[in-house]
Length: 247
Ligand code: GLN
Image (cartoon, rainbow, N blue to C red; front, top):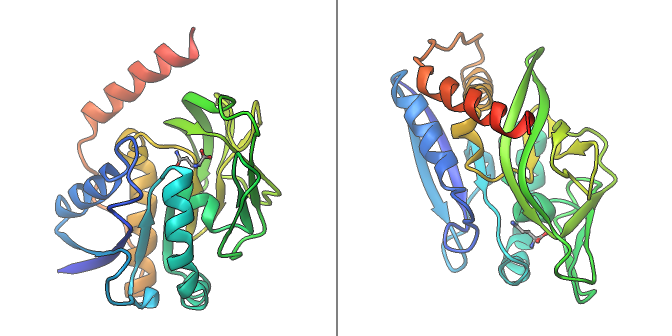
């Protein structure tokens, strides 16, 4: 039986709007295909993980307060995380976690939370805390040469700058900044995005992209994933796209 090892970072601090659902979706889609998804958790006070042992690292969103507390802990693993990124471990990072992998996050009060500085982007919140990008969002994403509409929900004050390779083109909503045309950050083994939702339940193609990537890297062979019956997921997507795009 093939297996994928996932590290879930700070589950007690980074979990907004159903971010954990992303892991449940990965587990469901793996189990249906007889793939064992092992989930380990790490949070402050636990033994140091070796990020390179994992096929996927997942971290969700969190408020500024949680971000500033855990950033001090996360930074201890900077070199290890950088090596894991370079060696191809997959990183799925939502909102607050997305921000922390960049150079810094500047909060509403102007306070700077240093990021891991693994990627060149940086994020600054507006001084007016009521100014936030909130609402449903739809982007157009290209995965494995195929274009798909990605549906989610965003709620962030942070405005992310200096993105070299965005995850999606915004069709509805804000994206990396107010009224931006681009959302998130994407390289083959990193999806960093503002989309909560949970992202993967509304976008099974993205879940399968991640599963396929992890298996191909781990087993060093071409993987053709067994098709799953996504009739319900597709119906739900059709309904949401109709509702959100035809307003
Ligand atoms: N604190 C960050 C912001 O508001 C992240 C919020 C989140 O993870 N939803 O920009």
